[in-house]
Amino acid sequence: MQKIRDLVRRHKSGERIGVTSVCSAHPLVIEATFTNAAKNDLAFVLIEATSNQVNQDGGYTGMVPADFRAFVEDIADRIAFPRDRIVLGGDHLGPNAWTALPAGEAMAKAEVLVADYVRAGFRKIHLDCSMSCADDPVPLPEPVIAERAARLCQAAERAFDGAGDDAPVYIIGTEVPVPGGAAEDLDELAVTTPEAALSTLDMHRQLFVEQGLGDAWDRVVGTVVQPGVEFDHDKVVDYRPEKARALSAAIEAVPNIVFEAHSTDYQPPQALAALVRDHFAILKVGPGVTFALREALWALDAIEREWIDSSDRADLRAVTLDRMRAEPADWQKYYHATGSALELQLQYSLSDRIRYYWPDKTIAAAQAALFENLRRSPPPMGLISQYLPAAFAALRSSGDSLDPRTLVIAHIGITLDTYYGACHPNV
Image 1 (spheres, rainbow, N blue to C red):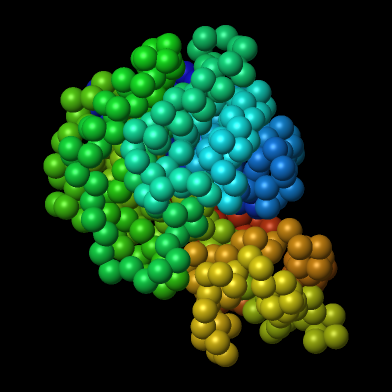
Image 2: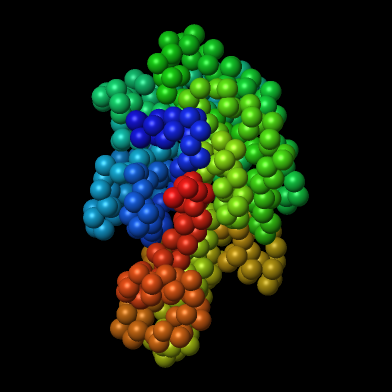
């Protein structure tokens, strides 16, 4: 994938540039990503699906990789965003979804997973075999992790049959934060040591070359390490550049490879900019943008309560919470509070497990009804400004409609703007 390789080369040559990787399967988040990219004239956007979201068994979205590509491209077509400016990536591709199985079975499924992603046109592939399967030791020894990553790379290379410039690029690395944020309380994180980061690269390089994957190794563009950023239910560990100074310096001598930073959600703008400066040139964001989506939807719900007669209200917020209580499987292993504290976690936890519930048919119908109510009876500007002041100001400035959908997209775009500023500080 030449677009990503060119960006990495620019960064390695001294240009302070990065790319935002948006990890979400929500249509409004994806539309907001395209809208933001068009506004900022980005050369390409990077949208990723995780192995839990999208896999050959359907994942929690019900989509296989080819479905996800069609889903993303349909959104792009609807708003006239060029398909050739979309890069699709696969995150945490490995046995993560099948760790309850013995390693042999889980890795066989992971090989199918990676091949399906590549055949569907995904061109940024994170080879993540860091998790232990049912019959594995805990933690998994790093040589085993690297050997399994090389095995999955073989599957990806066999699946690719396109032109050389379009060949997949790879991300490796074992110090991967838990997808969707930490489940435990956090205070401070240990930053990956330079020695560990370089050892991981050396071990993978040796195994790739030994298995005839020298050409694929030349397309490894990033490695995942822990720069000292993470979030849990209600706290964020912010990036502290002084703690990662030695790690940052270590990658400078490694050609064509940068760091990929996971769990950058909720980092302040100056921290995101510092991460890119310090060679964490790929910034991943997922719950941070769906949290913004929920903020906007709750704001519209509040506007509805003040503006629409009670007999006609969609009551999206109440409907969503009722469905979450009725179907707790997607949050109960993460949230352990009771009473009013649980109500707060369900809605406002930074890990944003509410994102699993937006496709629910009852919730989707309530959202559609909310939008229709506010279209049929547009609220006054002052009421919109009260609950969505930044989105209101952005749309007033651009002259765009104050349609509820547009307000949601503008609110998500405010989060995306912080990433754009970090990745393009000189623009």
